[in-house]
Length: 500
Image (cartoon, rainbow, N blue to C red):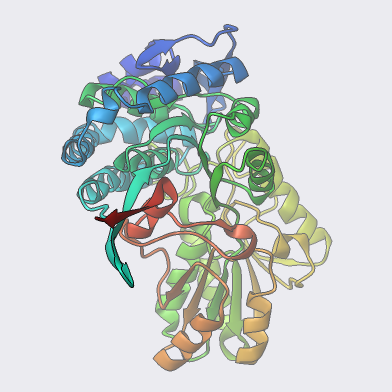
């Protein structure tokens, strides 16, 4: 049996049916072709074969979607008549539907993104939980009552939380379904309407989610899905009738979005790049720290903005930690996402594959040493790359300063606390960081000095939808998730009335 035939035999009938149907844009509750008829290919990164052709949204289609979202938001629309309780019930229903079709979503995610099926299943679970978590908040966005008085006059004042309006959510390819939920869920919880622009590399689960939202009873125009390239995203950013842009992706693109949104001062939230430091002191539980360092660096094929790609190890235990992380890297099974033995799938695209290879080769050329991995592709076909650990790195090397987004860890020894804190903070990014030490005083003290939105102590990637996410410095603006995640999707109105 050929590899392609074997894969076909593993697919759920619902997945095969979905792949065989036209992949269109979702605008105003209808599946429609792009206005100019353009399509693009979405590719399986494990085989380099085209999965399906997808409608390619243009600026014209972006305008169509904005009009639909605006009409759905305005007073008198079906969506405007949904009470907070009705929104809560709807969100919970969507979470249940995702759970019911979890394996279908996981298979589509693995096909389109390349991540292992086990990893994709975890992502689907997070997406479902996001809908249920925010379902509880829909009825709890309360204002405050503020008594006021001046001599001879009495007032009643209060605040209200109100929806912003039309939200453009632009998401990356590393967690396609989860990131789509990050943008859609808090927006509609607060009563906004949404245009979702998925990454061109991974549009499939966003399109399937669009189908599910309609099935759940989301009114037409409330969520629109526009697969396509950067021009469609730019059109949304520039559109004067979009009230907010929520973006997750690179810092470079985030800066362009901030500049574009400034034309009419629309609200912007940005979760951007990272180059997280992971610090291991010599008194750490080394078995746990070594396993944690491997997880921090190689999770999701290294394609995660909060991964601990910069490893700092106190000199006394440096060799021991390097030996342990190298062994962990070599124990990872790189292969096709649908193989149960696989613990690391391919990188998402040829472009990303070539980028990671280029960084590793450049580091070796600059004098760095490979403690594990290779500067070459891990397979003749597919965008596979071996987990890599690099030593003899300087702080000036590109592989140490730039966000690579691949399974690559650089390791540098340190001697003192002050030295490592200075090195850890010597970056334009500030998304995540970590500290390993049995001395909780050391762990908390050093953690408090690290300029990052999330700091893990004696763990990594421990997370929950109740916790806010975001970064310092050039890692972004604002926070997502948790109760804080609603702040960027609401306006705060103050009402003052004189009592007569």
